[in-house]
Length: 289
Image 1: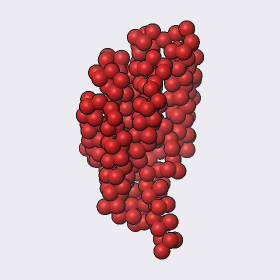
Image 2: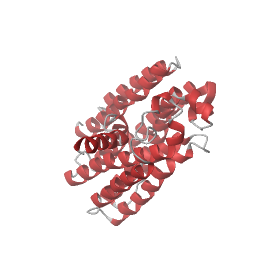
Image 3: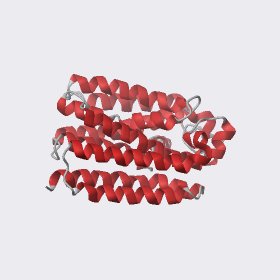
């Protein structure tokens, strides 16, 4: 009995990708960019904790919904055949149950925040639910992922200011560009399988212009960061982090230009460093004058 319970818990852990924190980090960096900017470099600890834990819960819930939505496709892809739902270790209904519990926990977590933030959380949840299904009909589902992964930005501004300024929307759009860039690299890993299964991804849509499109998206991200830095009056120390992010983007383009699966996956995972450098730039730009 204990062995079966332990096996079930391990399957749940794999379902929410506890073994792969990169997704949480890619969701967390934009949220932290916003929290530091809107608070002038000194976020309130209560809000910081709420958003950090909430990011983990919502990413975990999204993974569970994704595995439910993709269970019939995942069994045909070697990389995803052993995912808990596809392999039969847990049922689709269980995955939805886990997602529902995690989403409820996230909603309860934000109860101390204002009404505007709670309203935005409902929209964020809807986008997270819809995203896995957009791969069936939308040419660039990575853009929907960018909206889902970046919604912590307007929510952070709403939680502190009770409104969303232009600065937040620029940061948000930049994050959509970033998500398209890193998730296109990720989609390049499975492009042949996705074509065979009839799925839509940006890697398929961009075709032979995939590397160029990733580069354009990185430019969009980096320019948006400069624009936000000007609005927020960040000091010149911001450029230290920005230049680190530029070097990361250049490295990623070198990797994906090979179109090798392992290299593309490496570029995707390395985006954690790019997000971290941009966060460092914001912290330094606010703290040092």
